Each structure stands twice: as structure tokens, then as C-alpha cells.
Amino acid sequence: MILLFRELQRGSRPDILIFYDGYNDTFAAFQNRAAGMPQNENKRIREFNILNRSRTRDFFWEVLKRSNLYNLMEGVHTKLFGTKPLPPLSPEMQNQLVVGVLKNYSMNKTIVEAVAEKMGFLPVFYWQPTPYTRTNRNDFEESWLKDPAQEHFFDDVYAAVRRSPLETNGSFHDISDIFQGYVGTLYIDYAHITERGNEIIARRMFQDVRPLVAREIARRQSQAGGLIQR
Image 1: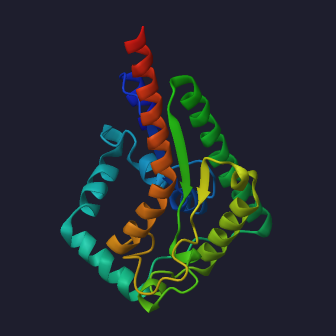
Image 2: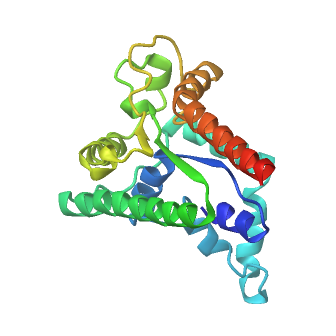
Image 3: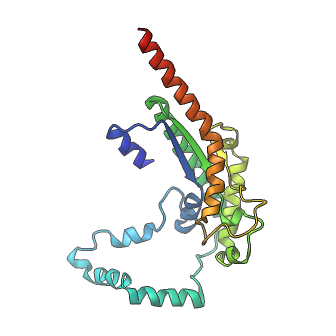
């Protein structure tokens, strides 16, 4: 959304704009225990003003963490012992986070649609699939999902989206179940999709975008015809 605003400031205007969201919105809320914040915000807090003399020790520690040796050791440790799970969420906190994710996303969507109406472009929104939403995931895909609490949180957020007014909005498309019925590996890790999976998603998006492109072409031709007549 910020990138969109910067492009508009520079004078660039899209005809059709596609947003593809869901995983980052959900995981960042689970990780930060607060909705609406980017992932790994704790790293930005730690690195802020790190070149200040009073934080020399922090600076050298951050340099060390970027070394190949440190990354190798960390990778081996993660492989052997896994990552340390976050403290469990209380039911009340989980409900608040779920509501917060949905509220922030809906507000961002409303803002983009208001700007789109003013600037004259068409936004389309997709709520993406994740390994958690694939009921027939295979052993490889299953191996990336180590945290039951995280899976439970994803289930709650995605269920809330399905119950929300977003589902009745013409510009919003929940494609979180798009991989149901397909066999084979469609995820290369905890979130990112294989080439085959990307093709399935792209074909689904094309169904919605194609008539919008045709409509935009027809509008431009009509405008051009009017100019010629005048």
C-alpha cells in the first residue's frame, strides 16, 4: 500500500492493481502479539540507532550474526532442536488478535478502494492459501509446520475472514482453498509456493482480471472514438 502511494506521488497510475495477502498479515500478528505490525519488528527495534557509540556492543553482535559461521551454527541448532516456540496465547488474547488482523486488513482495503475511486484504477484483492489451509498436504509440506499454536491461530484468522463481510465484496476473492483436490508438493517451505502452485493461482486470478482488462480496453476505445468525432 505504501509502494502504491509512492508511485502515485511520482505520477504513475495503474489501470488494475492486484493485492495478494493473508500469510504475512496473520503470521506477523502471531509473532508480534499485535496486529498491524510488520514481521520481525523486534529486529528493527534492536538495530535502531545501532551506530551510536553507546551501543558498540550491539553493533558487533549484529555483525557477528551476519557471518556465515553464525548462520551455519544457527541452522544446525534449528535442525536439531527446532525453533523456540512463542509463549501460548490465552483465548482472550487470541480472539483480540484475530479481530485485529481482520480489522487492519479491512481498513487497508477500504483506504485503497477510496484512493482507487479518486485516482481512477481498479483494485482486486486476494486472500492467499497457506500450508495450514491445505487439507491434503503431503509429508514434506507437513514437515515445515512445527507449531500447533500457530496453526490454530491461522485456522481462527482464516475462519474469521470467511465469516466476515469481505466475502460478499465483489473485489475480494478468498482463494485460500484453491489447492484442494490437487496432489503433489505445492509448497517449498512454510509459505512459499512451487512453480506449479503459482500457475494455479495465476490462472485463477486471470479469470477475474481478464474481463476487467477487456472493460478497460473498451472504455479507452470509446474515449478515443469520441475524440475523433469531436
